[in-house]
Image 1 (spheres, rainbow, N blue to C red):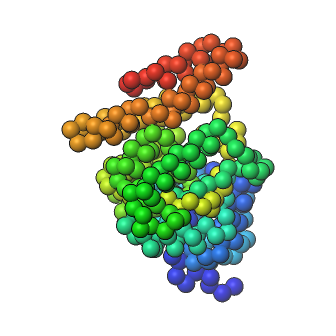
Image 2: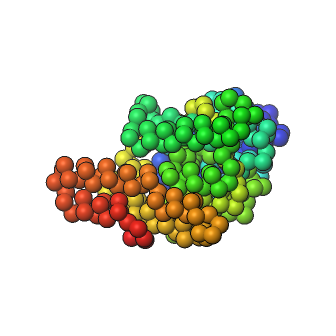
Image 3: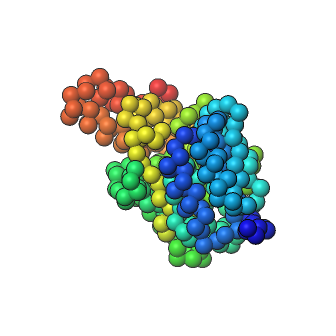
Length: 316
């Protein structure tokens, strides 16, 4: 087979752990891209998963590389390795159970190369269930609303941009993120040069993406938003963010992450940003919703815990 990768223009890295049926869909969504000049790297954090290794080798595609850890390193260590594995100017860390639409790389890279001052790029995203059917959840509806608010407000500040994109700059991006995380981490395109000095915190199993994004924006990093759906994010009960029993723990970690972000700012420099970060409206609304559900289901103890998070004014 002739070499299909003479000059890769973008890196796609998939951190993988024991979900081969989803991995196959993710890989196929990359291989079927209309922009073929990519390098795809699978980092296997489930040692001795011969099924994944055999599948990648069977493709015989020189654009695809496979790397396996000798022992399980954990999700954040794998994220960090993925981030540091970018060789081209732009890269994404694709979720093993998510899918790219066929024109994702073509459109994202075109925007990236025309706006090289930005640190991160995010398009609109569709949400699918375990079977690949499009769904609409309260969480994702809220993320869509936040996306549109910041997209429109950024355009009003810079009308020179094309109609389908807008740039949220530095501190404004940090403030936007603190109000509600409207980004979908698996589809963010990273500017390697502008993000290489930032690291994933290893003590945040669920919100390390919020932490690193906030740091990038707080240091002046720009966020380019593309008002076009280009990827499909899978929500299901087995995903780390979707396990019901871990929902309270996830919200507690999210609350603490925002408080730590706020404490890293100085009131004399960013009083509004620090206030918004402590307020973290979307997390409080989510806690309030979960409290109401718990009350309706008669789970009094859980309802009290959600109320505590909803009213929290410091780390919990």
